[in-house]
Image 1 (cartoon, one colour):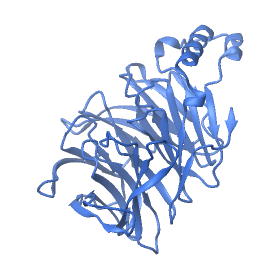
Image 2: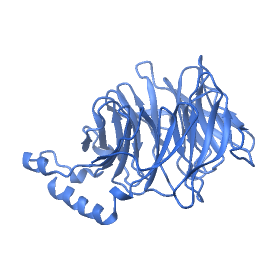
Image 3: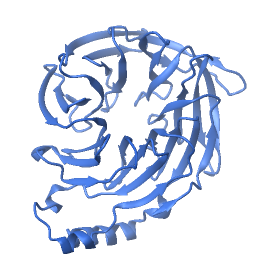
Image 4: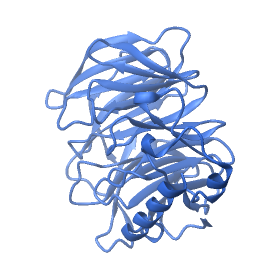
Length: 363
């Protein structure tokens, strides 16, 4: 199914590529996004969905000194977030705190909590520990993983441990396992690596070229979803990871990011450089997949693509589900356009049960 966007829009002043759900804000449906301007001073926007759900309001506008290439909200403090930034000549990463009070009338200055300065190369991302009020976070460059301990009250971050992935691997990003706080998945040019943070060692891997993005299914242990440059989207059961348990066609150009829904385990979002956001219904259980299927059953299989949102004029890089309202998501295209959508028109509990039965019957 294809359709344009009927969502709620908001325009940033400059180009942008990253957006994050503010998980710690349990009173509002909120998102943080940052801009990517080389010549102008960049901005971080705190956006909130109005109580009636009809308007996206800028609740805070903050100046940021450099281009923002990655942004992640702290899972236990709604005023704290991380950015990876570029000066045009080098990369850096820092933890920031939103000052109080704040407003959108003018651009406020962010408080720098800590600088993550243990890197010398290009930094790709910062990952926050998904478990409770943990003080741990990870920064990742092309060669190294660094585990940090953050003390926001003392405005300090200390390196707990650091390990290199080796010269043969160029790390590009990753995801922290929500089911095991000692496990992180890291993507590289040729594989997905699984790191044990207790030993800071790569303990397992899936040989897979050009994996662009990865996300864990928060409701199903052992289930991982990957976005490949050329081969679409793959769902893996890590207990038998030789081959994916399900493949989705992805996008007509590069599939840039995938996100598993925080509440509904079969819902997956993906975005790509084809200027589209795709909503998928995908079974995450390997028990429902068999090694050999008849051609007849394959032809009858229900289309896993619930909807494709195509009303974008530029590549879509940013993507985030709302933790507070898991049927709502935010997307961000490179031209600085934020769109909030609801998946309710395409996903209802009654139809979910019917589709699931069809999927199980035909596979």
